Image (cartoon, rainbow, N blue to C red):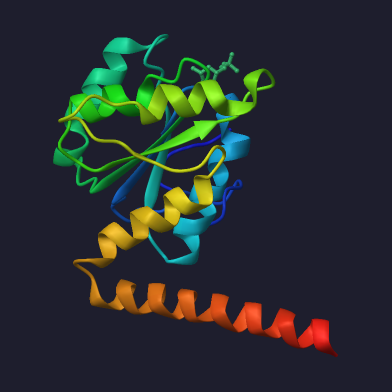
Length: 178
Ligand code: RP5
């Protein structure tokens, strides 16, 4: 079960006192199996974050206050995951000007297509940057890239990560030819 203010891989690690700059929110604790990949990506780049279950349908008033207060609490990017009738990312985007990255969580029925379509089809004026179904890792990396626009050290870590992917592919090519 997630708790707040992680800076380490999701576990029973002690919470950090570092000010979180990313908020990972999800409609249910059942989404965590998918969403923890976002936390792991943020860990990789040393970005402090918080984790919270906030449901657009089950806890609507909390959802609105959470979204309204996020910027004043120092949050710079919201990663929001939900499945099925996935209103959370869009509703959060409607009550904040922070960038919201939406993660369609796949459920046992419909393979996440319902989640994807619920999140991606936003009306003009209220954007949600939607990643692939189950694409929480990319949500974490995208949040890092957003923060990296104003953080040269983080931008360097992101460039190193991308270079590492090139090396990985070339190593696989070398292995294939060995
Ligand atoms: C959505 O309903 C949640 O984001 C979750 O993906 C889905 C199912 O929730 P639980 O019934 O597992 O709590 O709002």
